Image 1 (spheres, rainbow, N blue to C red):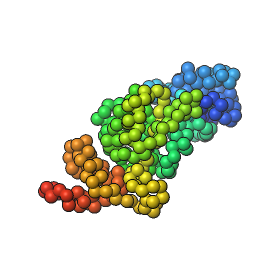
Image 2 (cartoon, rainbow, N blue to C red):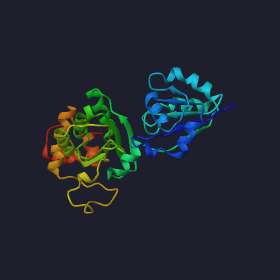
Image 3 (cartoon, one colour):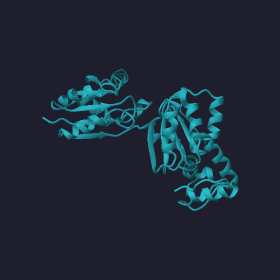
Image 4 (cartoon, rainbow, N blue to C red):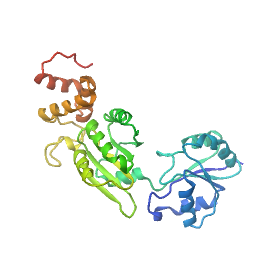
Length: 297
């Protein structure tokens, strides 16, 4: 007998967001593989569901895989995470792949997602977007990760804990430049809030306001409206880049040079922020600085 694996999205805060189909699925399967059995157990009890639970999380997923495949051989199994959609920045990809390879049907039960919720209220262009989850905790690794993300053509969506929010915002400003950001807090919960501003304004805001709750950040793509100097609608046609004033370029390049410690990576980061070719930026900077330096390739 080949059971189905149901990937079930559960509420990210408001229990009213769970779908009737998700409830029906959680009731009907033989087992629910849950990232945190306490949280998922509370959800099941709230809706009067008595389906057995088995923990499945980042630290035991390899050991649990044979048991879950065995369970699938006897009937249907559901996969649930703490909140939101499994696999998206949460455990589950190995189980989905293994179940499919073993011939089991994998069925999505769509529903709440912190990523989609944050994008929908951000006020920023939502497509394309990149989901990075939580950034590394160590400062050097976090900045290295941000440097890789800086050129990406699209919004960056990431999660952050309250005690690391201030440092993450500061690192985003240092590496990405002063792009727009939507700082979404406690989405769908009682104290939900969305702070929309530039990164520099967000740094100042959360220096004065104690971060509390769970955060989802949406950071605008490089070359967004934060680089325009006129009112909305006065910028260049969509899909083109407008060069910031020379003084802005030089000031930002100086900050990036201090951050990276070398001209080449600083120039690459500046090109990612402005959307301008590195050679064009190099020529503008060289016109004001005649110190010998090989042109970038």
